[in-house]
Image 1 (cartoon, rainbow, N blue to C red):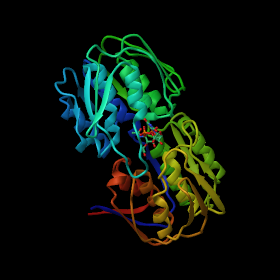
Image 2: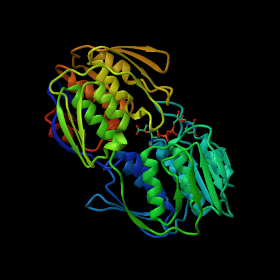
Image 3: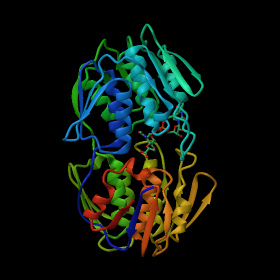
Image 4: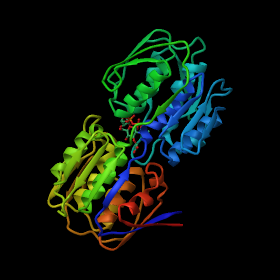
Length: 420
Ligand code: EPZ
């Protein structure tokens, strides 16, 4: 199993290009199943999760080519079977996003339940409830969801009981080919949903309100192909900004969308970072100062993103002062705490959703283990700020969501090597 070896104590300095967003590329690739002509997804990040989605589309019978440029060409016209197996879905729960497109386009789909993961049980009840409201017959047997709509789906009013990113995405895509109008209520508003809606409209769908709590979709007969540039990854950008703050450095990110990072930039400024932004760039400079602790409470967008919680836990672990972090989205997203404490951090857990962090000026490198994607990025940040060398095991978690992480960190002056 591969490891990362990081020798800390050096400020991150330099310029870095941000890759395309994993959490936009994945639903967009699934949405390519709706098109009757070829689709080209541009700026998709070269990540394990994107490769898993490509493998899934190919296993369904789509022709998928990853061009030299990194663009992903998908031709999903005329699929012959509609089964997404447990072996693939269990490795990446976003595979569940093929359900809506398949049942909308072909009238049937058999997709494995994604099951839980390290950060929580992550049910899909809202996805299934919504598809049923759109007229699909949905049954769950032996760990598989079978959805069928031989006469096609019918537009309806759909009220989601929980704000769910994946549920909103699955239902948006399903409604594109339904008969009549669908109105989705209580939708997630993440920027990746806006990007998906823009992609669907390029295919000829009639989607409006994406990025707000209410989304209207007027169903159409058929969807054409298109070329779509995936938005920049706001979580990758936030992660490198926090790493620069934790190491008292100064970095310049390009090909990024600052307006999608609102609350994260505000929290970094509260922590003492000097931040300037342009249309597609962000500069952060700590002027060599130790960051100040900041309280964090995760909420659906535009609130503080749960995907940035672990990174700020690492920042607070070395910051001046104490802080409280409250995780409101997932029930088990503090797996990084015990690993951070192995580096000498002083973090107390109060139940499942509250952590009290007492900042210390100086963690010490040690062997630690990654448990989930964002937890592993928090260990990287802590290792960069710690004295001495840290080895992080099970770094396949990191490779799911951070493209070329050691090259990017080396580019910023860090001492990082991948050990086989
Ligand atoms: C997406 O996951 C992201 N993944 C996650 O990013 C992100 O943390 C999450 O949204 C929240 O922002 C992708 O976009 C591929 P949810 P998703 O459905 O869609 C509950 C990362 O690190 N819920 O918005 O699975 C659920 O249990 C990943 O990149 C139901 O109860 O998240 C959770 O508590 C991790 N019933 C809450 O809603 C449902 O039917 C939010 O989940 C669906 C969800």
